Image (tube, rainbow, N blue to C red; front, side, top):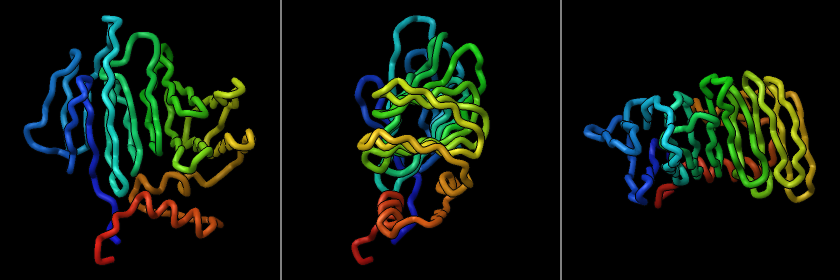
Amino acid sequence: IQPGRMQATLTLEDGAGIPLNRVGDEGFSISQSGARIRNTMNGIVYTDTINTSGITSFNRLKTPRGGEYNVTLSDGTKVYLNAASDLKYPVVFDEKERTVYLSGEAYFEVTKDTLRPFLVITDDVNVKVYGTAFSVNTHRKGIVRTTLVNGKVGVTIVSTGQEMMMRPNQMLEYDSGTGSVRLEDVDVYTYTAWKSGEFVFVNDRLEEIMEQLSICLLYTSDA
């Protein structure tokens, strides 16, 4: 068993896929929809630009099992993408809002902008923020967990339209199978430790622990 590594595929607006095996690859610089994209030691970085053309172009960053990668979006928001995750986002955000689409798990450090709310769209919930740090996890089928580190977010249940506000150090779990919502105070590091290369398990079932490890670790043929 080996730890996960920096690995992902960047899909451009024309459908071309670029494999990313490590941060800071030399010579990686692309101009697209008025933005410059570079692969730096901090991951993929987009220039800070606002789209006023009315035409939105999207990129997609996808990590395999055992892979992780970081991206700095055009507004300066930093996203840490965990293993087996998929993030779709505009090359340049428009003047009214900042919307991204997530499947899997990611940690967000959102640049504050009171005029342009930041919205994370998943299949079951939408998370709306203005400037904060939080994580969203959709890895377990039918379960979405949002953990708030600092700031303030509103989580909207897609099926009902119900919105719930969260405070720092809280975790909200939505079960689409039962329709239940659970909001509780937690130690947020338990849910965000993966960003620092650690696993923290507290009163978790063995099944849940093995599921998490199978997503984030690499298995060699002789393991």
